[in-house]
Amino acid sequence: MTKISVEVPDELLADLDEHVGEDGKFVNRSDAIRASIRKHLDLLDDIDARHGRLESEE
Image (cartoon, rainbow, N blue to C red; front, top):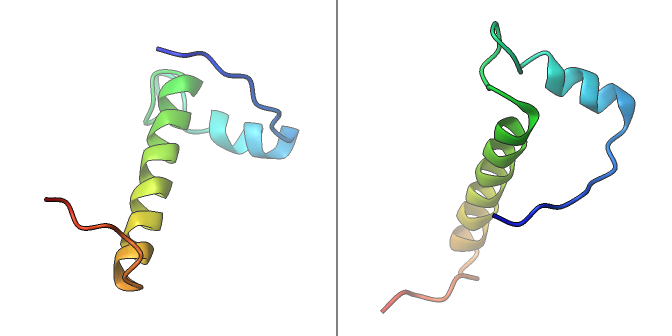
């Protein structure tokens, strides 16, 4: 797995951290960020599909 570095505003990181840990939805920040990226990309794919911008899979 490739490791990347991203600058995140403190307020956004604090919001993310509320969902991480024993009482949160995610085990760690990496899991939370990966899930967020997946969800966002799925949303963009849905938008592209509605506008006919996706190539059909053959």
